[in-house]
Length: 151
Length: 142
Image 1 (tube, chains in turn blue, cyan):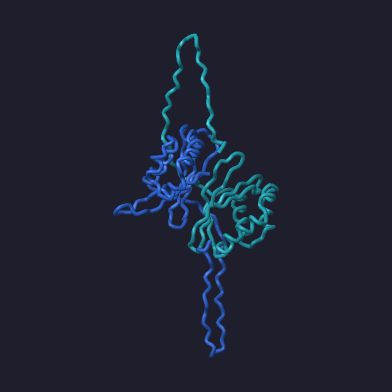
Image 2 (tube, chains in turn yellow, red):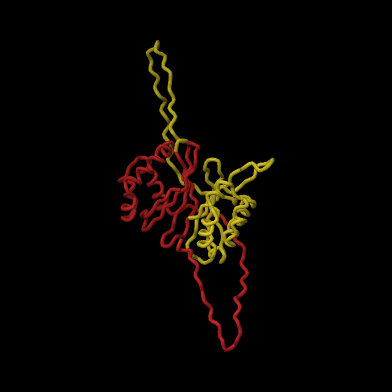
């Protein structure tokens, strides 16, 4: 949480005037309100990216899954761990599913998209957060998957 | 992960007919995309979310617990609450908006998802709460 450490501003006081500067009164924060989330789906490319990941999970295809992910994510998700994920969720994906887009969150240098997986077996739904990072790829930047969290 | 364990179904074959049953061919429709949600949650859910956040901002453990049921009160120890306060109170104090992301079915509860967007311009926070009889039974901050 170092990013959010308070920044203290030091004000200079002119001693000769013997006037002490008073800190300005900060306006009271407006009461929070609850708003609705996104009003449109993310791009087709982003939808395809997500579907491709789920297809790889469904097919237990580690090579395809890791094709479009960052090196860091690949390191964090070895084949053995991937197999655990496919064993748990693959059969449910295979029976069919739909996706509801819930919105986007700001997380450092990532674009994180929040989805809900609604399985056609009518069982519990699963939250999927997909983080995307722009990484240099030869001469141009490519958008790669930096994380997929299922809960 | 037990929830998603494979269920194996054994098929019976009538030996007398010597006909092997073929599994039916299923044509699966591709995943459909939709938007969620079209409206805000019920008032008790909104009140619970804002009540919890106000209690965290004010470092008010007693009020925080008041919104929860008995299970919540047992689970949310002072230590856990203090940790939440340390992480978010200063940011909440500067102002924030709550963006409702929709609900999710997690038997036996309905989970309500929301995003905290801080006016300090920093990272957003994804939060979940579940309610029973208008009392919070769980809160999870991602």
